[in-house]
Image (cartoon, rainbow, N blue to C red; front, side, top):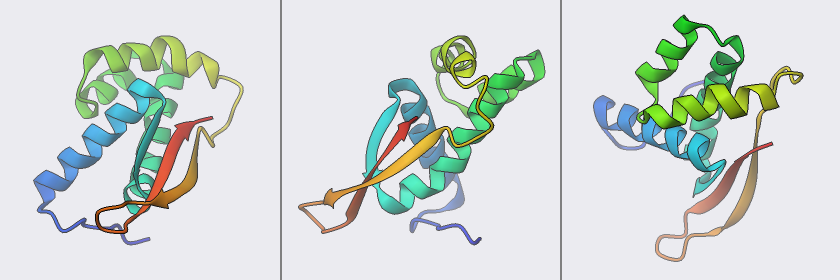
Length: 112
């Protein structure tokens, strides 16, 4: 499946996805455009899978991607045990209203 470039250069696009994934794991729920929500869903699921592995290598991989160290601590201490008996499908995307300024379709990405 080809990914969207969001009209940004590579480094800005990576920074956007990293910050959205960090925010989603930090708060458990974010509102963003539908395209961005679909783009970060596999990233968030991968981070939770790393948290479920629980070893040092997985922690360092998560620290290399996520922007805040306390989010990684929350991922390994709180989120990973919550999904211990679940084999994927950690997130859900709801369609929301349209953004007032430009009419973009909004979506809510939340942890199940």
